Length: 370
Image (cartoon, rainbow, N blue to C red; front, side):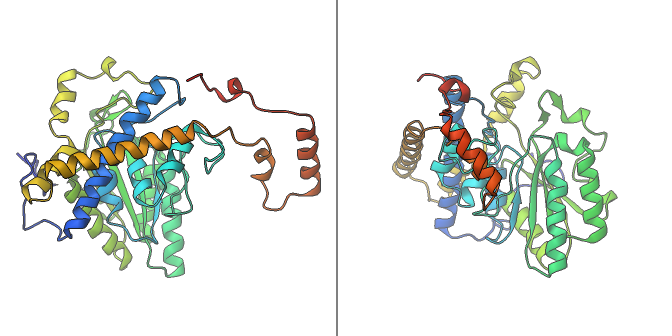
């Protein structure tokens, strides 16, 4: 049974509402499925590597793949993305190379950020993917500011910002929503209502019936989509992007989904939620639902599906093998990453520093023997 007011196109058994279905080419549908499989497989592998001590920290996103892929696939290349720390699928879809993303998890010399950020806090100029920050909700006002600049410049661009249900209790959420409503900026607020802000349930975040209804107070539209239904997320985001791009202002999209794993590799969710709840949502797995949908349309044969999983798994294996051969970032990046053209006194400091023979040891990087 579909919750009232919740957009759903693909049902849990893979059947679908043809009247609401976006008319996407078969190859596009297969590409979307590959995005789901890649995101899920990467998630499982990286959490396993963290448990083995091969990377220091990881933020899993299993259960939220449809939100990531469905939303970002509805954007234009020139749009700007302001992620939280649970959007690796969005990054990959926007052109972030798998090898570069794995390098960021390791913080090695091939990490675009040279180890300056925590794992899962990636950024890339390619794809207009803005840097992630750990404080909850701070990206919301950043996105609104960028969207305001787009409007001032007369650009046909959109900013999308991702955040969880817990962020709706932060001041940044309310400041950003109010500013966006007043100035009618082209911003999409995409709330991933995954039911838990670490150990705090969504019922402790608000007395409102939904999170989407909060948009009403700020003078713009709020909608709800089944976050485990990729096509529902795609359709809601596509509509919001087109509205924003043509001067219609912001939209808040509440994607109702579930975080199936821990909040991070440092979390034990069994301490605050019941196994029955996790199993309930596991039966609504977004990856499996989309596979059933493709199967219903005659687009997912067993051999093709198995080959896709193997191809994705092999690509991740190769990326990991390569990352573990790459050394730590050069010490010189402490200096060269600060200035485009080094001032004389900074160059002097760098030369003195390197002449002293300082070299990073494995224990300085928090690395462990394989």
